[in-house]
Image 1 (cartoon, helix red, strand yellow):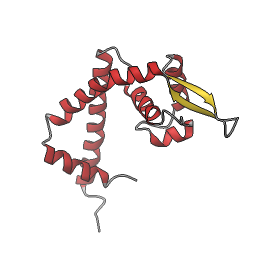
Image 2: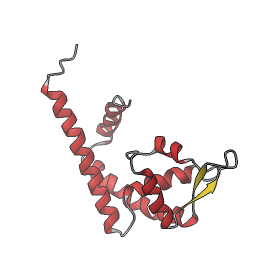
Image 3: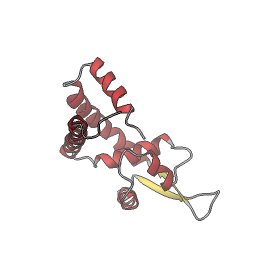
Image 4: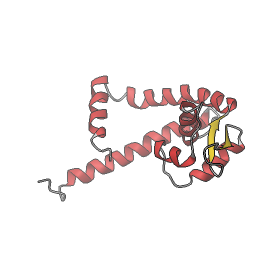
Length: 145
């Protein structure tokens, strides 16, 4: 049985949390330096781009995102105000709304990706070999709930 008092688990948790914060901070800085929207916008736009034809309801979007669920409504309002997404009445349920990416939303998403990709490669590619990255993926996949 695992000894939960073993300090290595605490050290692993702290390393994971600090690594996550550091990586996200560097990506946010890279996007900001390029005068682009924040990373959370990219995540929303990517999911809506993947569902371009059918749209997505807000509650479905919550389960797909790589960001915290709180504040999603305000985030969507800001992205909509910028003209990157639009809400349309759901034909199946006239009370509900579907979210769609606009052409300007797709354009900004495509402008963001090279900056995001370069940041990922600068952060991970310079510190991990491909073999280490593969092991990292396997290790982290064990933590999915």
